Structures are given as structure tokens and as C-alpha cells.
Image (cartoon, rainbow, N blue to C red; front, top):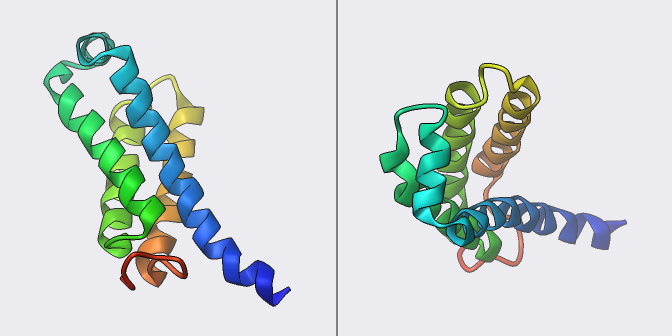
Length: 122
């Protein structure tokens, strides 16, 4: 049981990081212009396509390797709340609640740090 607990926290951090990395890579594969069009179909914020892609990939990589985990997790939580309320807040209640729940997970990372198997100990 101790071994399971020892590795479950870093594994959880990595899985939360994979979510952001996969989302950013998917948007990159879609193409920034196509993603900007997708954003514009809902809100006039298409200019945020590249910053969003870069942010998601960076957050994913930093969480996976465990670098500056507390601050990266706090930024991820804020991003999840913002996008959940602003983008998913209308008709996509499930998407909004998913983002809010993810923000809770990222806040746990913020409060506790990266756990084991980190590049640094933050």
C-alpha cells in the first residue's frame, strides 16, 4: 500500500499534465487558424489561439516533469475556471463542470506541490 501511495500522487500529476499537453497538441494539429475560427464561432477571442496553444503545451510539459508545479497548477486552475465559465458556461454545462472539477485537482497540486519524481521540489 505504501508503494501505491508513493507513486499515485506523481502519477496523478502526470495525468493532469497529459490532459493539457494533449489539448494543446490537438489544437496545434488542428492549426492555429482553424482553432481561432472555432473560438470566433463562440466568442470574439480568436486572437488568443496561439497563446492558448502555447500555454496548454507548456503547462502539460511542466506538470509532467514536475517543474514549478505549484505555480503551474495555480495557472492551470485559473485557466480551467476562466474557460469553464466564459467558454462552456452557456449551453455546455457538462464542459463547465468538468473544467471546474479539474480546477479543484490543480488547486490540490498547488497546495501540496509536485510530490515525488519531480525535476524540482516545488
